[in-house]
Image (cartoon, rainbow, N blue to C red):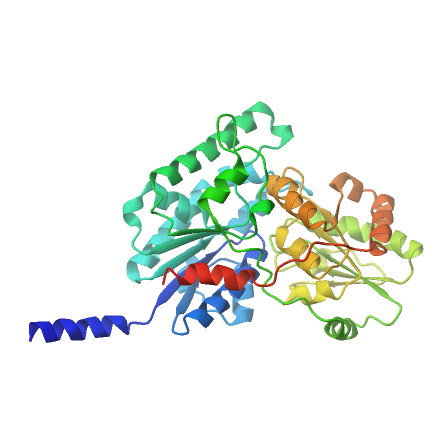
Length: 416
């Protein structure tokens, strides 16, 4: 009878629905879009899988539109996007220093996470740049009681030149700590996934006496390829979007967007200043300005032939329908434009190491976009001239893969 009871218990355990907890970085909306695509592919592999999302605004807005279930404990998370906005000024965000000053927020959010996994057993936790969870699990490995997968689209803190020797030493110290954690607790991450390919990783060093970033990443990560989460729209689909936007034959559409973190208001205003000049140079230009969920559209100046919108679901469709775009240097928006083979200007945030080094390296590898500094964007004549030049540029981008979400899901699915 004991054997029979054990057998029945085993059968019941086998039938227990599988559960995963997805943590999506709130700094920008690109993580959310790609994570939803990966989650959908993961459910295709495991149809009985239930996924909860522990997330903050503005990610929760994207999840709600996609019909994804947000865990109630998300309400207790301290908002990282608000902190990033507080750390920014004009078009300047010292990303490394901002993250260094985010410790109180990260501690709070890890404690929320720990309460969630205490209350509910999850077979898999997926952390897309969930820095708090990854760091504090390495510091407290006894708290790991689930399969844990880490995802990121860049590796390595890099100093900005303006930071001098002090910042170079600090970034090297942060990198050395991460390398030591990974060497000591290799079992803690059941999988490390790089959203991209080996050549997308910068060739720089982690710091004096430390490994080269690309070589170390190749030895410690699996590569999923880039995750767009969509098939580039056909010409017919592009024309349908343009028609819905009221773009008439012979008109040219410029889409201006700065992502979801709320730090791009200054760039939007600079583009607005350039709109009349650009239209004098090229009267066919029409502008669609997307402020995102954290910038009030009413705060933008009004210009003839420029419509202003807040949050736009499935923004990639609008980007694919444009003739040219002006964007911040965030990876997702730039790669969506690259996948759609659209000409675009991108303006990295000053002192943002990821946008200036990691993202720019990747875009240059794809031959995508034209980078301009914010100082140039502040000159309306120069910005207008660059925009008019870009709209006529013939693009020859490296193709962006469309199976990245499926490849990432396969790597994650092996852990369930």
